[in-house]
Amino acid sequence: MKIIEGSVTAPEGFIAQGVCAEIKKQDKKDVAIIYSEDKCTAAGVFTKNKVRASCVDISRFHLQDGHAQAIVVNSGNANACTGEQGVADTVRMAELTAQLLDIGINDIIIASTGVIGVSMPMDKIEGGIRDAANNLSKEGAQNTACAIMTTDLVKKEIAVEIEIDGIPIKIGAIAKGSGMIHPNMATMLGFITTDADINSTCLQKLAKDSCDLSYNMISVDGDTSTNDMAIIMANGRAGNNRIENENSKEYHIFKKALDYVNITLAKQIARDGEGATRVIEVQVANAPNEITARTIGRSITTSSLVKSAIFGEDANWGRIIAAAGYSGADFDPSKTDIYLGNEKMASNGMGLVFDEDKARQELQKDTVIIKVDLKQGNENATAWGCDLSYDYVRINAAYRT
Image 1 (cartoon, rainbow, N blue to C red):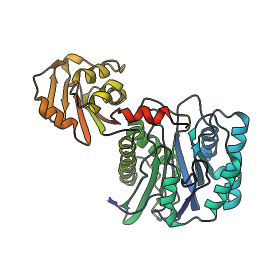
Image 2 (image 1 turned 135 degrees about the vertical axis):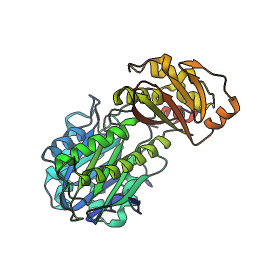
Image 3 (image 1 turned 180 degrees about the horizontal axis):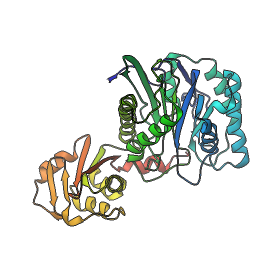
Image 4 (image 1 turned 120 degrees about the vertical axis):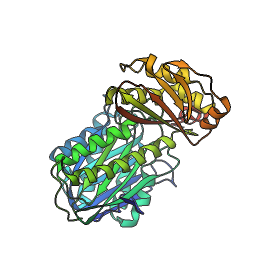
């Protein structure tokens, strides 16, 4: 596998564009379209929040046949908790996009992100959709990555190339997310494209399993939003023999690359957490099962006390084991060791004398690594988050204003 230039338009047959429709500000792009010149097999993973934007339910419905050809997305307005008018506006976005691209309405995925409970400015959004549809290109990927951002400080994108049966296959992706990020389909939007030929059943399993390892293992603030989704479209342009067996070598080559793409984007989201100054990486080792490892990792990355201690460069390992303890996972604290980077803080659930200066040096790194060794099995998991700074409160206290 090699990293290549580009993002969602790197795979063959994909074009895109992001434009400024003035939903947010006059100089901010906020409407985008990603389009495949061929109909794709497609799959998605969506928020588990019971309060959902209509784009989530309608997009899930459109994916029931395992196919899609375009994604239309706006930022600046979540179109959530907006009643029947919100549903009508979501349908209108799909209808207009389908009309402009001359494809079926059920082949459109709709995504929105932004402020909850505000009606959509449909005159602006319709104008933005027309503008984006009329200017689709390979070069439009950069604008598209910018158009899906809300409080993000940087765009998040990646493209890789792999080889299956001697044929080059590309995977490209963009994502957004910096606040309201928490496991259970982390609060984000992710759009992945590939020119691989793969059936929809395999693609759906790949999407779910990969999201479980990546977006569902990050947390910025413990809030799960109303609009989260990760969508993958595969148009088959590469011409490989169709991947139809999850036990095949080709499936696992593709899976490894997809996991790399999604984990990279997930870590970019954690790094761009609102007000964040450091990434937190929690490695849970030697757990009795994978669920236990994931549950403990998630709990530690979500803990406000752990996050605050890391921001303050305070090697307070007690907050780490406490977060593991209230996670709901079944483990034996009296067997647990805790490390901060290479510095061992606790052994068998009890504190050790450690070098405060070395511990502080670990806390000053861009990525702070916490290792929790349960010594109760062979399963491992990694979770990511960020520290909690003063700026997080400042940003979210004035989100609407």
